[in-house]
Amino acid sequence: MISLNRFHKLTYSEDDWQLMESAHRRACDLLGQSPLYYEHNDRLARTIMKLFDTGTRNVELLASIAVHREHVMDRLLSTHH
Image (cartoon, rainbow, N blue to C red; front, side):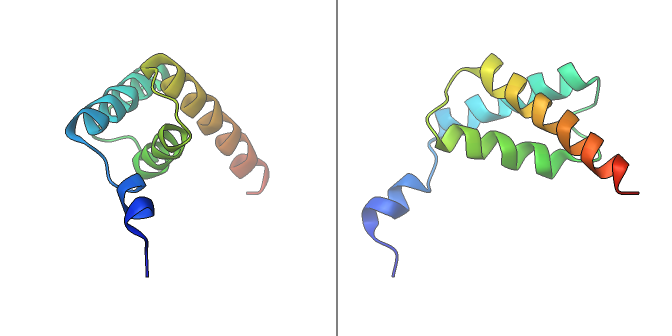
């Protein structure tokens, strides 16, 4: 059973969601992609959420790190195909 303290950590406030959404839009902008149609939207969103869960709250930092990870993933996946 999940403890209440851990459950609380897994939930996000409206402000949290807005911050993560802003970071996602910024990351898509940096990638030159549409936030609605980016092929790896889910992966990008999960990356931002994981970074947010570590305590990062700066939109530019969240977006920049997420974009860097997208570039790394793209390079890794392109070398395996």
